[in-house]
Image 1: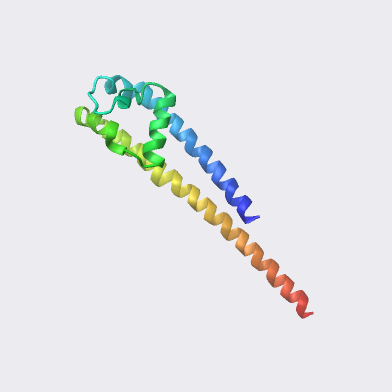
Image 2: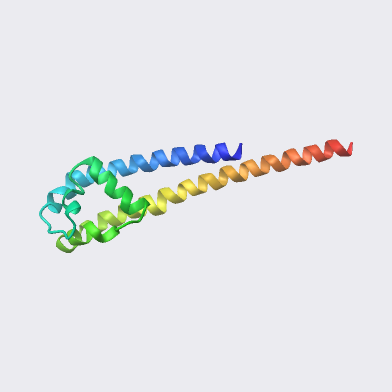
Length: 131
């Protein structure tokens, strides 16, 4: 019961995280891509990182959840346009600090409830044995 509850909490948390990342991906395609294609990048995949919602979502998952190559594509863009740093910091804070902690809290809460339920069952069993 505890594992199933934890998996349910992780599923809904993951769905919330995916919807938030899709929203940020849409915004990145609409706002960031115009400037990003004009900036010179060291890596060729950075030129198309915000070209479509799919590529933007892949890049945001790579950088915010997996925490891989955070500055690879963003740093040259921020050097040219400093105000994009605010947007990317907000995305990182919302996903990494907000949603990931929310999922962890939900999983721990469900595990705690399952533990309490198991303890109550054990106490009831011990009381039955004493009688």
